[in-house]
Image (cartoon, rainbow, N blue to C red; front, side, top):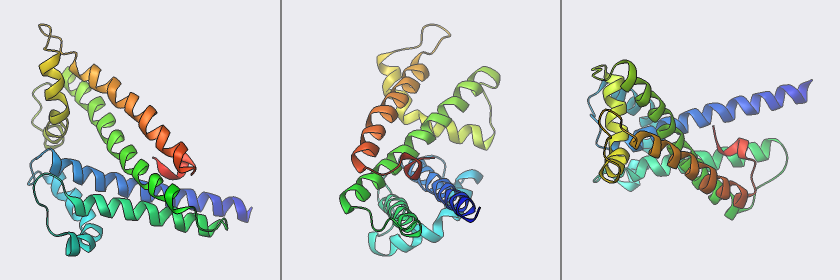
Length: 197
């Protein structure tokens, strides 16, 4: 019974860390896509993640350009430390460093692809039910996915009223998630449950 409770507790902690990693990568992508910083949802993400990101901004400096290295580093270190902690708690000992580093990269890639996956689903639904929505959440999702949608639209222009680019991007996200992240997780030799959401 105690062992089952311990396992459940570890899985809960791992899930909470993955949710926080999800928020960190959302902050990274909002910056990369130049989404509205003053949007209330953007502000909430920044406030929630600032305590951890602030630790890394001290030596990586403030955001320069589109890519926030401090947020990326915060997510990577948080995930690697959490995997080490879980390995220590379950009594397996320190995982191999190369596998640990690959698992950290896989976790970041997984979180980024999941954000795009969910954003694409919401965007597709919004395009059907509320194509001109002005809600802050809807605007943020449009700003988030536009950088990955625009290049695809140049190759596959809309066919009248039908825009096929979301379907192409959606399939591409699933392929990259299955092939790239799957390969990284296998190369890391660490359970996929510890890496992804």
